[in-house]
Amino acid sequence: MKSLVDKAHHIVIFTHMAPDGDAMGSSLALYHWLNNQRPKANDLSVHIVVPNAFPAFFNWMPGAADILIYEKCAERSNALIAEADLFICTDFNDPKRIGPMGDKMMANPCPKILIDHHLNPVDFADEVHSHPEACSSCEIVYKLIKSESLSGIANLTVEIATAIYTGLMTDTGNFSFNSTNCELYEIIADLVRAGIRKDDIYNAVFNQYSADRMRLTGYALYRKMRIYPEYHLALITLSADELERYHYQVGDTEGLVNMPLQISDVWYSVFMREERPKPGTPKPRIRISFRSQGDRPVNIWANEVFHGGGHANASGGELFGSIDQAVRIFEQSFPKYIPRS
Image 1 (cartoon, rainbow, N blue to C red):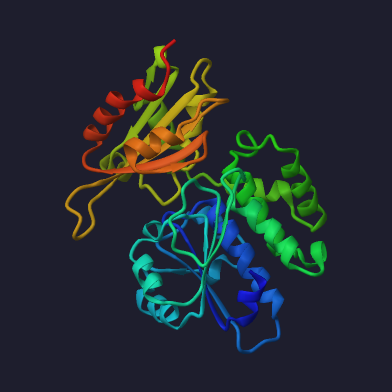
Image 2: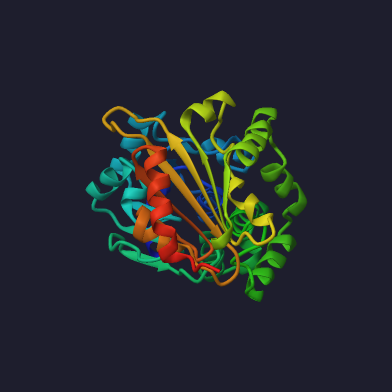
């Protein structure tokens, strides 16, 4: 990786649509590391371009203000993509995951580096760091920075460490799943030594609800949660109309899928969120999140039925159609993937 970085002058970092904490953390950690590698070089430019807006509760992250959102800055983003001589792709395994930018990226023949932890990466990158066993892409970025840097931990600035910890924390549900490997906690110890303010990071991400978001959460749990007791399964659905009623902002449903797992005897949880059709797409998009506890995988279900994937205990998928259609497919499919007790 370092050999490609040392030759590059115009680097663009990509991450997936609807960026989450791991997407933000892995891309920002690389952004700070790259700028620290050649801090005095006037021939190096590094930019992060994301397909669409990220939740406001990530605005505090060092470097977040420098991120370009493609939907808002398409012209400038396209110019940067066209002139890039190195692409680094974080937390996604298929160019389709970055929307229209994927075609733009593939049209540029420059080298591409993939850093990801999802199953079955598409063969599009020149250098691949794909580790599905990792808890997050931030874990992989941490190990790359440690291996690439001659100064090791001394080069792990508080900005880099903060970004990495944010991804580790969010992609494990605050260390409640995919977090049994003792090496993860050795990494956290390194990040603490680098100066992160662990409690402040948690508060900045998880304790920033608006009143509308709190009301939406209450409505979703009280009115929209269904339990399938014989399958230890919960489902929450929210239509576009319902989201608008509570003045939905990007990120307002983050973590909602985890809440039913706090119920005794609920081991699987699914959340569906409807997005209104965009020009050229006549059908709504249904975003679907899957969560489970213990040795109960949901990633195969997400992949085979809803064209997604992810961790064994935390996955995602999508469907173009109505929310009712998505529920019908969900109800027809889950007996195949979840044993009945």
